[in-house]
Length: 385
Image (cartoon, rainbow, N blue to C red; front, side):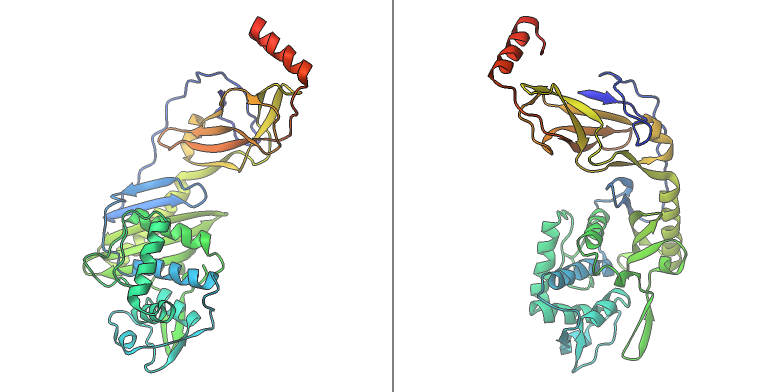
């Protein structure tokens, strides 16, 4: 195990400091007091949780449920089971659905892309029903697919009873699950994640604006969904990109649209102001050498398998500790790209990040005489050649 210096960021150089590196006094993590009853803020690239307030409590989610409806529809499209220009029939049940509407015609048919816009931008409950019935055959079958997706994504505090988030006793999510789902919406289906940023949509001669207040400000916002019922209060799942860095947040249980807009803007400004992403090492760039047993070379350069990046409060960078860990000496032969250890990145108030370390070049095994000499040296002197 080797500990690498805290200022081990790209361009600053990495160096060995021994096994017992004393950390400086940790900087106090920045705090944020939101009026939302439940909240979470995450960094998209590193998955770091910047804020969590009752993040695992199961709450009614209202129209935030439509994020899962959209995710499920995107799955049908990505799998080739449907196309954006497919027409779906409108049932009387869909036409009669209460709450917010995109005003689908009955009888009639609507294009899937229009239904997606009607659901995401206009928050149309009727659009959700048309999509569910047209793609899965029934609302219940579509709900089962939503719950299957929740299980697949590891959403432990989520269950869906309908396709649009209308109140039901066994319909709930946590804000942590909502953040995880939103991450997957963006990551898994980037080819469809564009409707969430549209500010308005006109259908059937009726123009309706997106209820996401952040889209109308110069904040870098590009989604995702608002929600409101008397039971759930006002809520917002937001996403924004500034200087290539994406933040996702969920705020739930607020008292008004004004509060929702103000808290959304505040939490974004706080996250970007107080935290930054730091690249500790880049994928493929050697940062250390691992000892090799029975190899023609006694050491092999190692590099992280992917960019080693962490999210830290701006004052906490000096407290960073980077450690290369090997499970004893690497046994030859060593293949280029073989995992030989791990890089552990730790900082106060942050969960450790572990990234595999790979050999950057191959090392052949010693011949019979060389192996004999290596073994003899170890037995006689406790050292290698």
